[in-house]
Image (cartoon, rainbow, N blue to C red):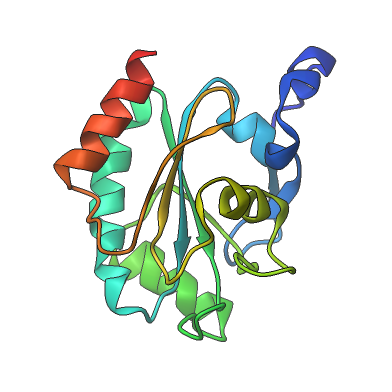
Length: 169
């Protein structure tokens, strides 16, 4: 994990500050470091959700846009009772079954008063997730650009256009 300069940390929006543990790992990452000067797609995920097939589409987006300045961050969550209780099993579903290489974080709360700092902000700005696989497009400035619900597939033209527009800024 790279250290942030004091200037970069000062520029990091409060909702992006914090350490999060990677899925099925003891390693943590600093969210500010990860998303600094990047467009970010934040997704709340659950390994046993009917929308879990979207992992493949999210991975395709990751491969298409990672070198253009997009970071995808998956926040595993059991807020809708569909995340595997065993983090190793959840990781296997993400990494082995769906080939995920984008950043996946350990289970955390994404709605309600116990939501992590980022999801409290996302919920206040554009609505908290009503189900798994909500997608929040966040600009380089740390502000929400657009919120896409679970039914929006990762390959939807509306999502790709929003990503392209955000990257062009």
